Length: 273
Ligand code: ATR
Image (tube, rainbow, N blue to C red; front, side, top):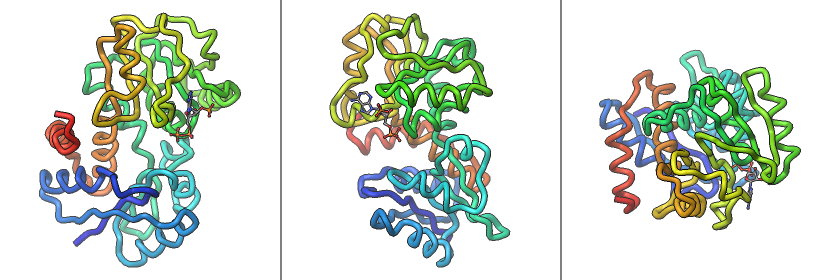
């Protein structure tokens, strides 16, 4: 049977096996999908061993995405832009192809929630790996403006300069942000520590769409805060997780699984509904 897995550390709580097993059942593909948690300095060896032993493809998550970028034979254009790899496929001619489906997953999830990106003013919070992966797919949707704000402003400036050729992207400090924005995407890891990015409450209005790439069984700190400020449309990163997985599954198997039912089952599994 064709074998796939996700590399991460820690990875025990990953939902990827659950999601891909449902995709396989739905599309009648024969495959198995597992977990691998190599020591941080043993990822390269573990990856080699997996493919030497007949593995067909894998996902890569924290903290291995940047390392995976350097280990594959070939990069997709979107992985090259993201500077990170979350999906690897062994091609029929034996080449390890590195891809990145995170940004496509974000855009697909935003669209599935009915969020309009074309001609919109987008605020992206954070300038780490998650922001980098989102930039090219967001700019491809032709927003009127995309502003990056980050605690360390120089990193936002550097990202804006790097993606400037793809669209109207600029950097601004949190203090000097000027609204109104149609959509705020939180790519920071602040919610992990129960913290908030230092965003002025006045930037949140009732018609703004709020997206947090993080997710949990209850509202993330950022979503809870945005709701308190009056935001009516809030979305967490669970949908992005399922959509990036669907994109990876499509890369591997050449067949696109449906995501609606799988997202519903995942929510049930997490106790969200
Ligand atoms: P990831 O790969 O998830 O993007 P990362 O590359 O470590 O992780 O980036 C984390 C991002 O969250 C950074 O933009 C970080 O800001 P700095 O560049 O200033 O470090 C941001 N971040 C983390 N904790 C934060 C907090 N409490 N408030 C605001 N931003 C925070």
